[in-house]
Amino acid sequence: MRLNGVRDKTVSMSTVDADRMDLTGRKIAVVGGTNGLGRAIARLAASRGAKADVVGRTFRDDGSQGIGFVRADLTSMREAAEIGRTLPVEDADVLLFTTGIFAAKTREETAEHVERDMAVSYLSRHAMLRGLAARLGADRPADAPRPRVFVMAAPGTGTLGNPADLNADAATYKALTAHMNTVAANEALVLAAPERLPGPAYFGLNPGMVRTDIRSNFLGDGSFLHRAAESLIGVLGPTPEQYARRVLPLLFHPDLDGRDRVFFNPKAVPIQASPGMAGARAAEFFDAGEDLLRRALA
Image: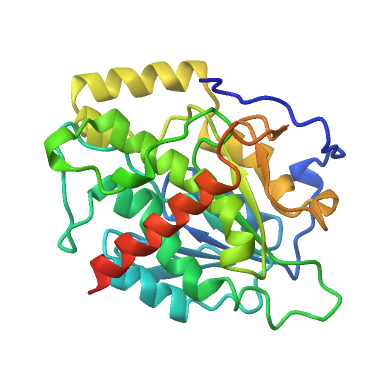
């Protein structure tokens, strides 16, 4: 596994300073924008003049100018599908998915019988995109650039997963294996969606190790191990705000106009897709997601 991926030399981009960006008149929807990386990105976008709608459970920025809130429990595929039908994205330029947890040491299942990490970190995104893809940016001017979807996980690291075990069978459950299947499924989504859910351009983000709450489900929220791990990550890695400053220019970068299926490492450098993920493997994951989603909604 290569944590930062392999540089994609076919993609070159100019440098844009987040402090110099003027996003007046632009709109971003951030699924997972109420906490962690999503919140930091939404807040920075709003500070630069954009309108940011955030989706999540608990709104922490009430009264903040430019930030709207849509409440949703994304462990529920029914709620995710409803967000896909109703989230106002017709005037949005960018849709960003940052929702995610880490699989628990003992398998957890939602009321819809989906392994909890898979539900939050991948399948809810798939469910929402079924309703959002065709509507994203549809009411913007005819000469506006193609709307963009950014999917945050850990693409380009060589994780190929197992689409045949998307729901992490209880008999063979291992937390790391289950979580890495969400990583693979999200990379596959970026590669398969242009044909399966056409309209936007799709991109993948690998933020690397940033101090957030994503590992609390695995390490035990507030436990000594959890606090120690996050403290170490906080010393070695960027803060959510620092990462937001790296990635915000990327989300609106003009050099991405006309491009699709590009992935980016923690420093917002273009990287290649994981070898073996494109084509049939990505299609298998997408089909497995469709099947699991149908069963969850039945």
